[in-house]
Image (cartoon, rainbow, N blue to C red; front, side, top):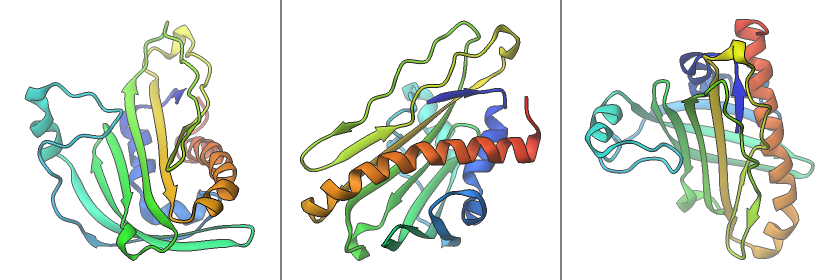
Length: 198
């Protein structure tokens, strides 16, 4: 997670622009939205977005879901897959890979959530937590916002994955951890490009 001097809406617009990923995200070779997905389930929420029971359905009614094709590659690795991308403006974007048609991943899930950051809050370190069957990583912490950035947004990124082949997972998990950090930096550079440095 990291705090930025941009509004939740500005950061959401960058993350939700899946079509542009291949133009600024490292290791993303192709990205395109191929059509709508089924509507979100009214009672399911992302892992890091904490909604009160009475606001869950109202928030999710403002969202949309699409299907997107992504091709990622690094070193000798190159893989294409389709994801269901769910977006609720200024709140969160999640992507869940369709693993039925993917020979590499047993599970692949990413989540971006946007929270108003307090000017006197500190950001705890996020840890990489590998397990025997799946791995999860979040980006390293950023510096707490300065008092002048009381309208900062805390951007939290989560990447969870499990490979079908455990041996491949042992080799590739370190690369995925590094890639997660690069993604956060790339989105920060995109914000500077679109909105200016703040």
